[in-house]
Amino acid sequence: MTGQSFYFVRTSWNEARTTLSCDYKIVTDEDEFQLTETLEFPAKIPENSASKRIVKALHLALGISYYKAFVPPAVVHPYKMDVAEAAFWNTVYKKGLAEFLYKNNLSASLLAEFKEQDGVDLGEVDISELKNTALLGLGGGKDSIVAGELLKELEIKPTGYVLATGEILGQTKQVADIMNVELLPVKRGLDLKIIEINKLDGTFNGHIPISLVFALAGCMLAVTQQSKYVIVANEASSSIPQVNWEGLDVNHQWSKSLEFERLFQEYVSTQINPNLNYFSAIRPLTSLGVAQLFTNYPEYFESFTSDNSVFRIKQGERDHPRWSVDSPKSLSSYILLAPFMSGADLDRTFGRNFLDDANLEELFISLLGRSNTPILDCVGTPNELLYSLQELHKQNRFTSSALMEKAINEGLVGNDKSTVEGVELEDKHAFPGEIQTKLLAKIKEKLHDI
Image (cartoon, rainbow, N blue to C red; front, side, top):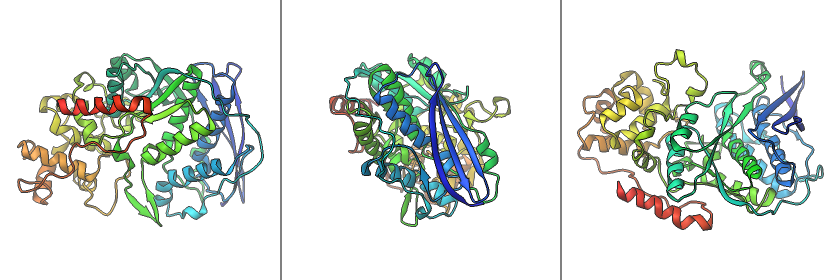
């Protein structure tokens, strides 16, 4: 079965204007498929220029999940689109689907292209002034915890929000309660027919730029609350690609990268409201920097998680409610945090010594960049992980643990090893001017105090 065209059919609201439905149609050489995805917001969404423009963007963004099933060569949508906006969406589809293309052995040349066209005109861009309040994306992990605590120290108390699958909030509610911020869940309803479609011959599946949807959901809440800031927690390492595929950098975290952040800022400014600001509060920090700052907040040790499987696996079937034994993110988090936490704190946080599990040797070697198969996940870079292991070796800790012994025997760490990449601030970020000086100063202060 071969894809021929993909249609962004229509969007609609329920009577209360809390649930958005986005309709799509896939046309193949053998069949047609109608699909609908929903987003349920925690409050009534106003009907204005900004919200209409975000609905358009959500329609185009959510469609990626269904478009990739057949990768048809043509897309059809009802919206007026100029050259600049078409270029934005072409970049989002190409770079956001780079990992998908790599894993499915597909060329980027197969992707359909958005083009300048006439169509539904949503009117002038909203230029209304916004209040000096913020929405903070929370995911239950150490990145958003560090971002939230930094903002609180700047006396910016945000409202938290999360993009949830159904009723599942993972650890995010616990984190929000500890942070003492309100949590607004945006519930995503994927059309489950796509699961059956993906079983058909000629279909493809894989990673999508989900952080784009997360960003747009935050923008919708900000417009609803008339808030000036949509703040996320994406660190410097998320900009580093893992592999190159046919001249295209493959970055699992592309929609968390600085490149995407700046691209999306321009889109928000020109297409939604120039007074609405989207940015990452921890952009200058490496994964190591985030780990080091996170250990200032022990109240979160028994609540946070960086393991995505907590959102999709029944709790009764898990060895631990927050960590998976074979998860790249769990092992990476353990290694990154270990030099900065006591053994007792590691035990109460993770419930096990990940470095003493010989069954994880293959994953361990891959995380350190010593295999032919890159780890495509939100994990520390090989240099960051090697730095942590080297620091542990200097501290004479975990020396008899199975994975540390492997690293020593392979010559990856040892007394004669110079320090690799440490906890240093990157000089690249996209902070709004009115926040930039204070936020940079606070980050430097917190690192200096450790």
